[in-house]
Length: 345
Image 1 (tube, rainbow, N blue to C red):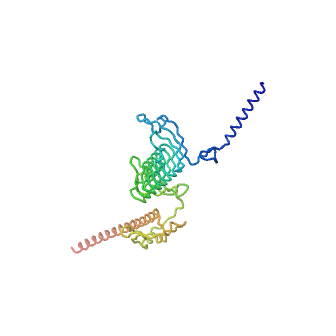
Image 2 (cartoon, rainbow, N blue to C red; image 1 turned 120 degrees about the vertical axis):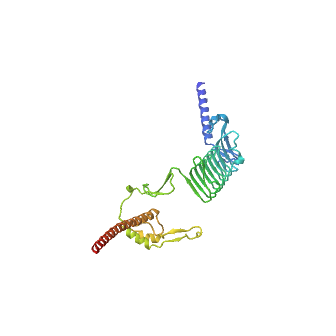
Image 3 (cartoon, rainbow, N blue to C red; image 1 turned 30 degrees about the vertical axis):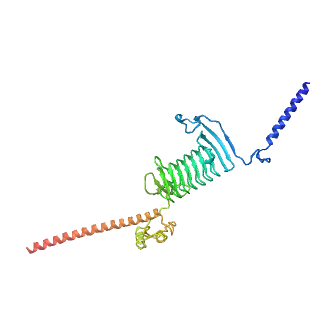
């Protein structure tokens, strides 16, 4: 009898194991008799939510305005939209009417109401078609707008806002990047790029980060990296030769083709003339025949100024010599005059 009981237990255990194995391999269909995955929901949405959670779970928890919150997951089949968010009860982040078709939102109280919009992070919103908002309290309201950062606002359409407290200010196809600090950094024109970095800018053109330009904090012009310790192959220059070349250059006023000559006029040399005059030294090529490097332009001017200073110094010596000779001649003339007057007496 004891052996029979044991055999029954073994049989029941085997049946249970068989059922577990069967169901672990089974596919469950809702709305379909031919499920293709472990869980296949046909022509229906999927929603999963938690019960109300303590307000202390709110990333912006304020004991004076404590509101319970819950977490939710939602797949809307009729909008092809996905949500995985947390929200305070009654906020409406998961309300169907505020969910854009083909949209995605994840994080805390993020909205994506635009067609194909994407939003993630904390309290960000993407309302424009194919817009993107990420970070904290960032907003992308126009079509194809992109906002990322803290308080970044992209509006106007086809615009980008990145950083802290920045805004494209409703301007079309504009870009703002940086930090607005205590006030918002904004565009004021369409097709405009605005950047704000109070620590300055550095642009390098080589991997060693020794060649490029800098805009120092608080400055209003680019500084060329010109550290003598980062230079080599120094060659002397002939200032007089530079002056002769400059004297022969065709210097005019002009405007670029396609620009209004009443509004956009300039002074200066042509790149071809500048390159012909100064484009070669003992070591190699300097610049090109279609552009003028501002640092090289300044260098040519300084060399020319130095040559003029030397001319002036030489002339000053010559003038001083002439003046001394003239003074001596006048003195000699005075002495002769006195001798003549003495003889006449």
